[in-house]
Image 1 (tube, helix red, strand yellow):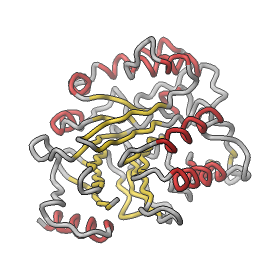
Image 2 (cartoon, rainbow, N blue to C red):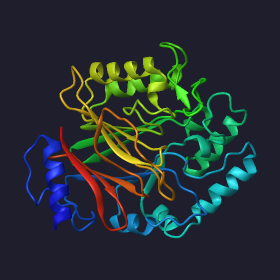
Image 3 (spheres, one colour):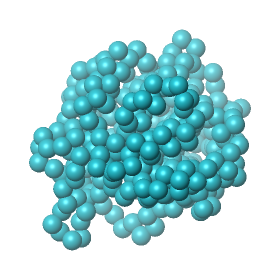
Image 4 (cartoon, helix red, strand yellow):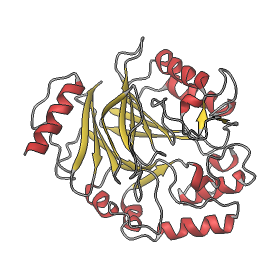
Length: 347
């Protein structure tokens, strides 16, 4: 009970909206508890097929409307496409994940280790072959236009009654230009000079701008394999391309898109980041969920101006329950049976 009350107080304080115990039930979501106005997203990242994943059976029981891969869906790190495909095939046979595939729509993006090279970008020699292997893993039809387009970015549209959700899956690998190494041996990267390089590339930016500008969705969920808001650590992040961060923020405001939410992975930690932006009627939230089979167990802290709550450095997966009538999003970091942290936001 004390754990429940702590989560409830945290969620109420952070939500900026009134709520009740009934609407803030922090127990595991189940089909029986889901109401007709809700859309449930389960997502996660950093998954090794040969390590125990404690969560697939729980996710199957939740029966979300969609499962979203946030990247590093397998760990291949190879330019051998036969090896890459063999690892995808092994993941498809993992207990309970195979069951999930039969019952829940699976979508998502890649990150560096399933792309083929650690911290890899546009200079990866096998990116075209890796794209086709990834699209096979995502069961994209052979005649889909995605097969002939560079990059794995795409949009998915869902309806709940007369309301709608748009999920915009980004590709932060295929077009990403070089990173700037930090001269400090204890750090990885520092931001590029302003205006130098690109994360999404020209074609993907144009696509994203068109999608957001014409979106009538009540929620627009942007899936990015790397963190959008957390900007002070020295690993991969949007902030390594500061001009791209500014471009994204400007796009979100000027598009008038409703309920924009970021889902991210990569870090082997889970955290909520939140910022108020001029011109936006709701705060922007980046929910990082990582990892599924292994985590940053030696995590000892790092700054994040936008962090809400505490970092979770144990394995977990993420749940996002969108209520299309109440215009709320309920974000939960999940262990096998427990909610590790939760926040609610009114939109």
